[in-house]
Structure formats: C-alpha cells, structure tokens
Image (cartoon, rainbow, N blue to C red):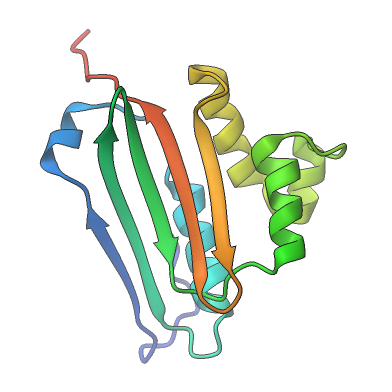
Length: 150
C-alpha cells in the first residue's frame, strides 16, 4: 500500500495474526494486496480523523484456509455493498464485467475473486460484510495446498 500524502499525525496500524502452521501453504500472489489497499484507501482514509487499523487473520478450516482482512474504517453504504456483492463477488449482476467494475472502482476485488474461482472452483473466493461507520470484513477462502518444491 502506498502511504502517499499522509500527514505524520495520522496513524494506521496493520496487524497480522496468522498461525505459523499456515506458512506451509501457498496462496496466489497478490491475493491480499487489493483488499488491504481498499481497506486503507476506502476504509481508513475515508474517516474524518484518517486513523484506524487493518487486521489480517487466518486459520485452517478442514481442507481449506480462511483469511479475514478487516478494518475499522468508514464502512460501505448498504446499497453500495449490495451492488458490490452482486457485480463483483457473486458475479450475478447484469453488469458484472471487468469493464463495468473498472469504472466503479472494484477492478482489484473483481479480478482477485475471479482468479480464485478460476483456480479453485466456485466454493472459493471472496465474501464481504460491512457496517457503515464501523468497518468492513473481507473473507478469503482457499483450498489448503502445501508448498511443493518443484
């Protein structure tokens, strides 16, 4: 995340709480980057005080790995969240295409979700919950695949 134009009195805390055992597994490159960037730009920096925290947690769950990237930022208005879920996450909206999402500012999340679903199947990818004024949570579900030395 580029922290350009931040004043020194602003404070953004990024915390990673992932058990050591998850280091044995692989995830596609740039899976977290667009989510963390959105948490910073559209969550924390949209708050009046420009302060907050972003938390990355993860755990194994059966044959899967689950990660949650959460922030205590501005949150997403309900109507925007509905559109985001339909067009970007579920891909069921009539306008769910890279071109549409690029113009509405969701291309990173759209591409990340599409890539995960293409690689692993429909039961994997992103889901989003948000409360206006309180923050947003993005859940990333992946199959647990050990790192191989090829």
